[in-house]
Length: 496
Image (cartoon, rainbow, N blue to C red):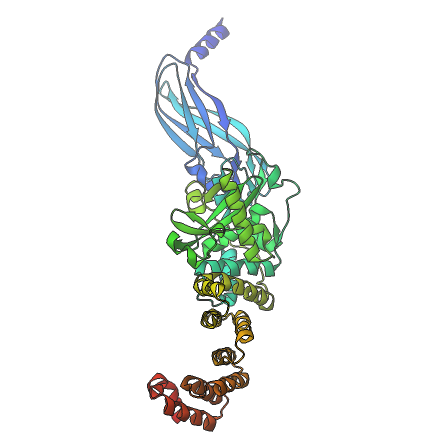
């Protein structure tokens, strides 16, 4: 009878607060920052008694990966009611040490008072934390966590290599030139496109767990699939202040970057609108990142082709990184314990020179187009042909300029302007002897041209032939009295 009485008494006084229906979402190490604001689960707290409970406190913790539990105050839990609560987590940086999917125990505890005595209940449940490279593509913004422009190793690699290799080409848009240079640097570094045999992007579903490399890992491994290489290009350009976006098309990822130019300035990039993307009034350039190691111009063309094809089919999704970071902030990686050697300049330089020439030709299309139109109407229009050649020469496209000069000479073999301008090219290249040869031939054809004589004078000055330089200056001065004012700086040098 005494035991029965105690059992009845226990049942009567036993707390009626119950934790139930603990549900947990997939947790990804790379997305750890978002769980501060975005719940990783929910739980129900039930009051099974006929009296209210007040001032309850819920605590949610994951051993080793949370320095402090997530807490929630429950001011009132009414009699015979159930309250559903969302669970957040403030993870510490140890979560980024998880390379493989790892099982952990989570604990939910509720503290409350019963009959003026402190009481508590708790439950535990196993959960998997996915490794730091894991991702699911049901929310494309999650890729933002992997685009880490502030990574110290990436920053040092990108900035040092750009400083050493970026060419001068005033006619080419700065952002375009930077992207091209980076693309070629990565190619010279030996980075290759490799399809992930375990989870090729083309075979993934929205719920399949995929794996993405951080940019520092791709630089070290020198290989990656479409998402790895798109992330690398995006993070690198973002580090240099160039806005980027990830492009999702059926079975594939690529990227694009913002030139910063307004739509009405698109001709400064290309006269071919099929190569450009206009987004929010700005000119963007798509790039097929898997073509690293090949021609940037071809990667640009292929990126643009894919963009417009899938955009027309309504099968394109654009993830602007600045927007993605609102939901998935970039991972803060520990300082790297290794370094990545920059590619040798002699491997980068020929790639950059070749691509710069291609970009220059594309950028100069807008300048030569009017003259090309005149030539199309009259193939013997020497003046128009000469302007095309001069434009190419002015911006350093000497081979293209000489090709145009050859075409002019096939029509007019004794055109002094051709020989004079060809001499200017040699002068720019510091080949002063060949410059003098062409200047001298031009002088024979136009003996009273003061400008040609001044060119001969300056080339001789560079060779140290001061007497010849002075003589040609005097001849020019006798023909054109404005020579003294036009060349005043040079004349001061000549008189010393």
